[in-house]
Length: 345
Ligand code: CP3
Image 1 (cartoon, rainbow, N blue to C red):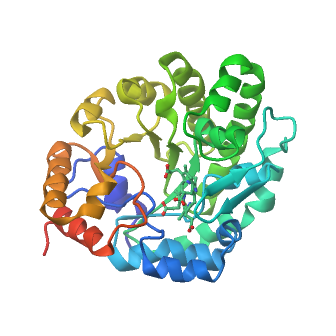
Image 2: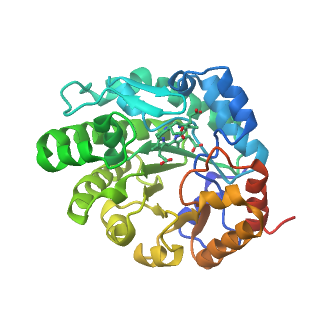
């Protein structure tokens, strides 16, 4: 029997440089797949979908069956945390997430275990079923949003163009904002520990909006909460690899890696992978093909894949995108990318 330590994805996270990098892609289960669209039709309410293990297990496995990725990612969403904290959250088709905005932690559930063990129990059931269903060589990634990014949706009440409400709260009422961040840190630690207990091999923290912060605020609202989460999770699970994705962190990547203590860093599209690897001092890097190349396809895609492979050569590198795959992506372009990375076809 293979031990989990032999999974190529986990070998790279322990610092090995492999001849062929392991590959998975962010948002690999999603609307670009016809089988996902068919499954979603059975449950049009996205949050209900996220809380139905029968649906989430199938959605997670779809891209593994079709492409044989080296890692699977639990199908869920970063906004289940505000939902579990008692904030009103809903998804409107074509508009994205909507939330009843908050300006402090006053209305949020204060006991992290109560929040996680209530509404989020089906997430742990999904992880347990996946653990049993996945081929032994495929790693299982659990995840959460980083507090800054989750707070952005909680304060703005959804997606935003300039994050003016969020930043004004953080800059002008730092104590109130800290209350929200503290609640998210505590809840996220419990949530991620439960995912590891249920069978996740690796965790990823998505800080999609980290890059909108100036340096001092980046330290306070991206690095520090992420550091606390890594510390809290590792006090229960000392060896669990944690991948951080501080999107658009740019020159702050080095400080982010060093101070948070993440095991590896996922790199966005606009940052050169080699320079990022130097900044994070040899920690494993993940990334960073432009997801638009997967829509355009053709020889431009091949060249872009080669460029990422070249930049990752000789380093611990996990092949991925610089951000999530987009709904208009032709599935055959994903196969073309995988074949090129694995040097087949
Ligand atoms: O395959 C996977 O990667 C696992 C599942 C996953 C989803 N969301 C499913 C989803 C993961 C890891 C996420 C993370 C997530 N969710 C992030 C961070 C990563 C990133 O992409 O920046 C963020 C910011 C969210 C919040 C969110 N969820 C938004 C803004 C939206 C709407 C935008 C959109 O693409 O429609 C969602 C909905 C969502 N989450 C979908 C999926 C597959 C689409 C919903 C649908 O099926 O209609």
